[in-house]
Length: 484
Image (cartoon, rainbow, N blue to C red; front, side, top):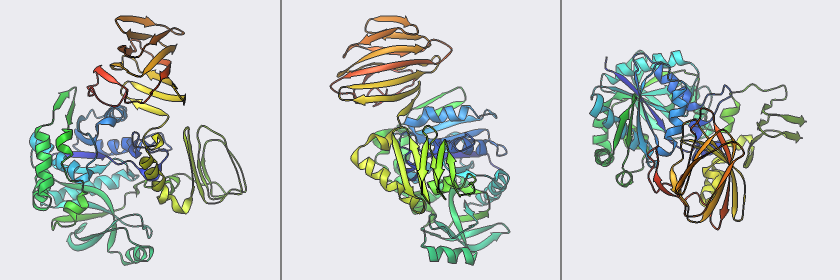
């Protein structure tokens, strides 16, 4: 059998899981009660499949370093890592086309490509491995194999797959894909036994996907191929990065693989399976992962509750008191609080979309923001000032940069800092500080073996994160990037 390369698609903002999931820290990075992220669980599940020694990930370049951090903690098989880094999302057709072209070019057209969303939960990994084996057999026969979850309830939040002619004892040709149904239709699907939930996972030979793209979405294929030809590649230390050319990628059609290929194709099969699967698509789905108390409540954090029933309360940092509540979802983060009727958890995305329309930072960022070198947390801000807590990992470095409109005062709380301030370079120890005037080049490096923790006080007429002129950067970020 041909080689198997899992392709993890890590896109989407997870707007229904706001305020924990945000554009710069989306749903795949959410920690579940056991401390692992959905992305980590997907990675482990993929690396444990027989014969897998390489993982391909398609993700946004802004979360690349966070993705690598999640992987490196769990890469026990030392699988090689390939990354296709998107400058922005162009939906699943472009991502899968790029993956198929990349694999064909480097590893062969007969390679089995296993497409896995990064933000789904599968609890029965043995059943998953068996389903992959069945899908690979179909792939060798020229099929695009999908994974259909045997429904356990009349779910209106998922798309469905209707089974057609049986191909063998464990798989069927797909008769049709169906959009999210109403409640009565979903109940009829559950009772009828012909319909499965569409899990959004696929397995096929790379050349099969390219053939179907050529037939059903030729413009996307041509556009992505042209983009890959003009996209730079970096390789080393069992890792390969392909950063997509932004100007050419912007010309690619934004369309899902279901619409572009799966629905019109006559070569799609489905493997029915029971995997303990969830797309963790809402807070209602998240709450189902934890047991409830005698009053039907699930809580994370300190709570004092009186006459409270059937509520989900997630507030790890702040005490929550509740009186006379029923069927609510309450999610508290340092800068945003969600209170929702549990029966309307799908509508949380409306809040996220409105924040995006307004240009509010709470759509895009948390108070604590992850960067390649560590994190920063906005402690307080007001007119003409902002205070941050900055943590720089050992041997990490911020870029050499300059600001036009703000000054910065750095105070070391713990650890040791190597500072560039204009023409000077010097060490700062705990309780020491330096002042950086507007227009002066500067850089912060942690030369030590423990985290460097410091307080940064910004002052000026404009304190936006886009007031940065970057000169050099060890992480390869482009000079005009809006990042620190």
